[in-house]
Image (cartoon, rainbow, N blue to C red; front, side):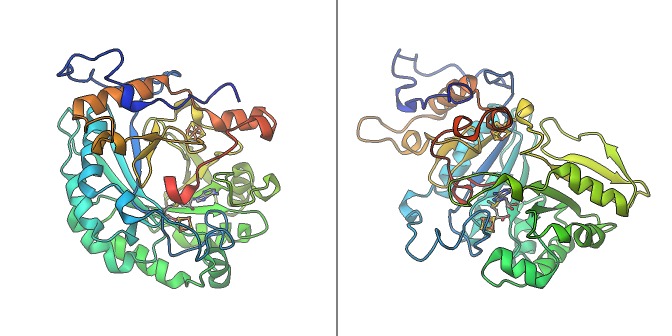
Length: 377
Ligand code: SAM
Ligand code: SF4
Ligand code: SF4
């Protein structure tokens, strides 16, 4: 692939060759624009690569079995390191932080990280939009503490209302009732608005589209249908298992009158539709059939501190080495890290989903793609 992928920068060299005056001038006020004119607004932070589910589209059991080598604890960024990096990102224009994983609620004492992140401010003095994506399995137990720590809202992944289908999809026999209890607990704790993400796989759970829509209509929960994506190398993705959002919408419109809604924020991934009677809204995330790379303002920080500028990237940029230093280089200052991030973002040229639509599969991406559970959704 010749377009859309930037070679990895040796970030350790930034600030070294050519020498950068020390101390560096304060980073240029945001937004930094990448090579396609896109600002950096949204940072997704994976806090663990482990998960208690084995959704076949993400961590199929055959690959992620008892012998799979998850990251050792020493390789994970500490809460202090994550917060420090998030603060540098905020200085560069990031306005939204999403904690993800793996299953983020498995990371011990996550509330402490949330409390630290909730204290961050944009250069204009505004708190960041702080949210989290979870499979909901531990939410009933944790929602109140998360809210008290400063979490503002939450996205829960739920692929079916039918218990048998749900148990099959999570592949660990986890009951749907417990996730629904988690959603109720999040509502009661004031985590709002709650979004529910449903990955639609043709032939697996597409008969759950209408039951899910009917269940959440009028509850204040925003249900979003996600096209099954070819992320990672393990899920055996096939195009014929993708149900295009246009077909999801057609099915929904047979059941209820829907009207298009305007985007609420720049770079929004979902196309929004509202029930004509005002009883709520749904979203369609069409990453396969209607690529939205054109205004993609997201970066992803892996559990061990590698930065990925695209969900479909082959490799990430090692920020942990900047934080901790290595054999050749001392730990870097915030200003040096900001300079490295700025250099990296301004070179970004990713647009994998657009290329996937226009090129044969073999030419549309790197030979190795990072796994979703490691980089976060
Ligand atoms: N474990 C948490 C969860 O499931 O919400 C957070 C991490 S998960 C990787 C983040 C999101 O990615 C989830 O909403 C999940 O459904 C979605 N996801 C994972 N694999 C996917 C795929 N192949 N296509 C589309 N969405 C996917
Ligand atoms: Fe776990 Fe989320 Fe991946 Fe499912 S989608 S296996 S819950 S990380
Ligand atoms: Fe962004 Fe996805 Fe396009 Fe990559 S493929 S640039 S993550 S929208």
